[in-house]
Amino acid sequence: MKTRKLSVFLSALLLTFVSISAIPVDRLKAHVTWLADPAREGRRAGTSGAAAAAEYIAQQLKGMGCDVQFQDFGGGRKNVVGRAGNQERFVILGAHYDGQGSGMPSASDNAAGVAVLLELVRELKTKELPVSIVAVAFDDEEQGLNGSRYYTDHPLYPLDKAQAAIIFDTMGRQFMDLSSWTMFVLGSEYSKELASALQKRARPEMLIAGTDLIGPRSDFAAFALKHVPYLFFTHATHKDYHGTGDSADRVNYSKLAEDAQSIAQIVEDIARVQPPPKFLDGPIYPPDEAATLQRELDLVERERKDLPQAYRSMFADFKTRLKSDDSREVRRLATTALLALATPGMSGFMVSYYLGPYYERENRPEIAAAVYEEALNWETDPSERRDLEQKIQKLRGGK
Ligand SMILES: [Zn+2]
Image 1 (tube, rainbow, N blue to C red):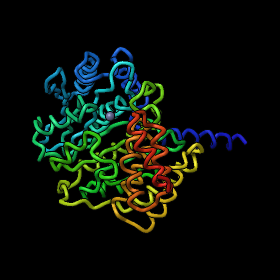
Image 2 (image 1 turned 180 degrees about the vertical axis):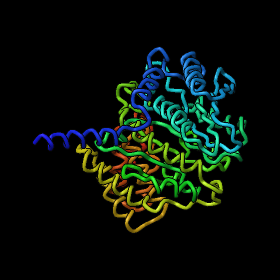
Image 3 (image 1 turned 45 degrees about the vertical axis):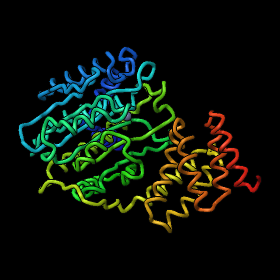
Image 4 (image 1 turned 30 degrees about the horizontal axis):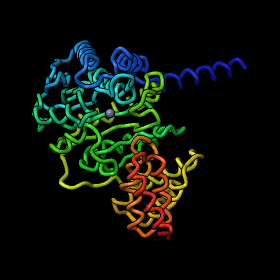
C-alpha cells in the first residue's frame, strides 16, 4: 500500500515536471497585467500609455542583454527593436503593442502577443542558435498595420538576411469562447521549410491554414509583401475582442505558456534550417486545411446551442461543400462565416457583403434570405435596413 502510494505520488510529481514549460506562466502574466493596466489607458498609438508600454518593452529587452533601438515614425509613434546575438542572419519575432485606447485594456490583443514575444527572446537566447534574434514590438497596428509597414520599408537589419518573421497577435483566449483551444497558424503556404518545421511540431489544437482564408489582418502582411517567409500565430477573436472586457484577468496564462513553448520549439527549428527558408512564388496550401475547418464547424455547431438559423444553414452547407469542392472560395467563405460569428462587431458587414451575395450567386435563396435576416440583427442604418428587407422579400418570392 505504501509503495503504491509512493509510486502514485512519484508519477504525479513526474507529470508535474513534464508539464512544466520553460516559458514561465507568472512572467507572461506579469507582462500582460502591466501592459493592460488601466494606467496605460489602452495603449492607443501616439498616447502616453503607448509610450510607457514602449519604454517597458525596451527595459525588458535590455534586461535580457539585447541591443535596443526605438524607431520613431511620426505622431509620437515608435517601434521598439531589440537584437540578441551577433550573427548576420536572424529570425524576426514581432507583435504589436498598441491597443484600442482608453477603457479598453487590450490584453489578449495584444499585450499577450508582446508577452509571448518577450519570453520567447528570453527562452531562445539560451539555445545558442546559429542566427540572431530581432524582436520588434510594433506600434500603431490597430489603425492600419502602420508600425510593421514602416519597419519593413525601413528595416534596421536587411530583410534579405531574415530567416523568417514570426508574428503574434491576439493570444491567450479561446477562439469564439469555445471550451476547447484553437491556435491558428497562417503563412506556411509560402515556404516549404517553414511548413515542414511546423508539421514536425503540429499539435491537434493548431489550425494550420492559408493566409487567404483570413486576409492581411495583422503585422505579418508587411513581411509577406517583402517576401520574407513568415508564420502568424493567433488564438483569434472572442466575445471581448476590441471591447472593454479584454482584460488581463481573462487571459488563460497556462495555455498561453504551453503554446508559447511549442512556438519556441518551432522557432528554434526554423533558426537551424539550412539552407535558409525561401519564399515561394505561389502558395502550396496545407494538406489538412479542409479537415480542420470541418472540425471547427462541427465544434461550433456542437457547443453553440444558441447558434442562429442562418449559421446553422451555412455550416451544414459548408460542411457538404468542403467535401466535394476544394476551391479557395469555399474555404474562404466557410472561414468568413466562422469569423463573423466570432466577432460580433464585424459580423453584420461580413454576412451582408460576403455570405449573403455568395448564396444568391449559388442560387440558394432560402439560405441567402436567412443570412440577410441575420444581418438585420446588426444593421442600424435605416437605408441599409431597407435594402436588406427588400432583398429578403425578393428571395422569399414576394415583391
Ligand atoms: Zn491586434
